[in-house]
Image 1 (cartoon, rainbow, N blue to C red):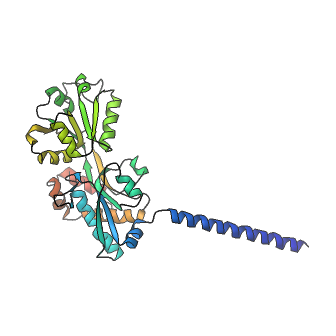
Image 2: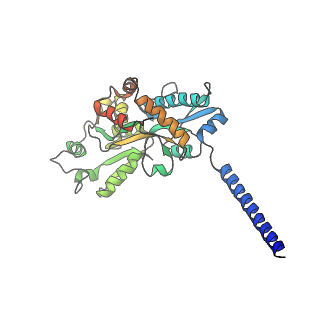
Image 3: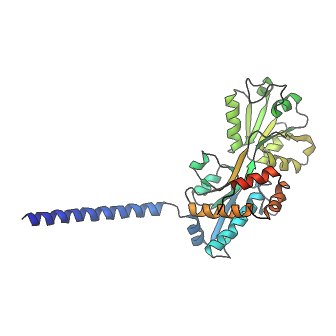
Length: 313
């Protein structure tokens, strides 16, 4: 009798174990179905690689007169495309370029509509909650452009001259209360400016714009007194303006922030391929000339930066 009870009990345990295994298998199946496919698997299945890029952030990322993508970030992604073709054994793999706005770019990566974001994004901790990032591709810094005929007091304050009340220290200068500042909506510059003005209790007006070109134009049209954006983007935008002589890009950089390429969070295989491609490029003899196409010959500090971020094999 005891043996029969034991057998029945054992049978129940087996039944429960089987049910648990089946339930676990079902959960895994549901999770697998709901989770996005790994990037390389998705690329292989779709037969194409999709890159997102900004159309107005020259020289980093832009759309040229013929409608094609161009710029430093785009050229880096072209190197990565070749590495993906080699990795997958698909030399004829198609590469699609999709323009993205500042508001939608990270969502496009999260949803798998874009495999890699070839733009101008700095890898902050807050953004790493949304997407993953490659090793740095460039050391950016926030700059400012004003009109050439702007009040001397405003220029002195922005440049941090010692004999004037500094913008980001102690009590804000009264002159700043009267200014209108402009930044690209949804950009890191907008967050930075908001935090600076709030910290130092400066009651200045902020006018967001949709593009870098619109920000420069706002200064020319006197709709904004200062436009804050990445320093090299400002230099390029002003150099191509028909009214460049009316504008002044300040030498000062207010921040130093490494930019990186954004990819789907948690996709370690794809990030490894991206980082390996970048590291090999940074360590190659061709990198100096590659970089110079957009920013001029790299100085010693720039070369040291890329040596520091390069990962060894």
